[in-house]
Length: 251
Image 1 (tube, rainbow, N blue to C red):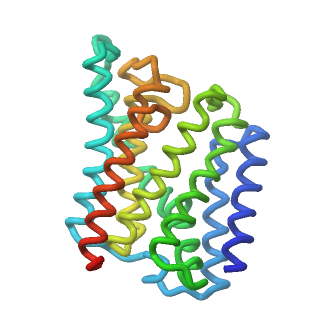
Image 2 (image 1 turned 90 degrees about the vertical axis):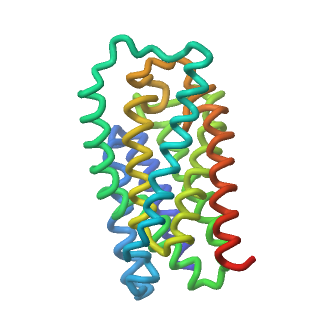
């Protein structure tokens, strides 16, 4: 547990420094060596770290999550008349979505997922925490790790009023991917979900306060990461996954 606390502090401190000094686009990369060092120090097996393939159904859930949440958010925004699609270059949007999804799946496996749902997860487990406690603490830390990005990173900052909603959403995202990790035993599954999420959300809704191709201006209301609608949808899907996990664990 001592290692886990130290490495969380290092991850947050180094990332915050990079976000504040113009290196926000590369700040997640620091998680790769931190994951590797923590893995080496605690001598985890590949299974403990989550480096194994899940079942086909696990990947179905992984992809279903972003499709359902983002699809519902788009539908709600469309009913409110906030979606502007007349000038969308759909082939370009699809290409960008595919590229971002692929890059995130690979990148997340050795950075965010590899660290938070891999090495840190295993360290918490080794320290004696049960699955519920590991899920809670890893999700809270994952949310906290994102704070510097939306407050210090030039070009990505959110208005102060929107930061609390984003932080809650980031924590829920961590809990969703953590629950997928519990259900499947695999960070690969969580990484696929993370990749599809980023590919869809950042192309269609944009990053932070910058709108995506749908031109939805009120990200604080409709955004899957920045909005109240997203908060409700993320919570609903998390509860669904927790119910599946509880049923599968016999709880």
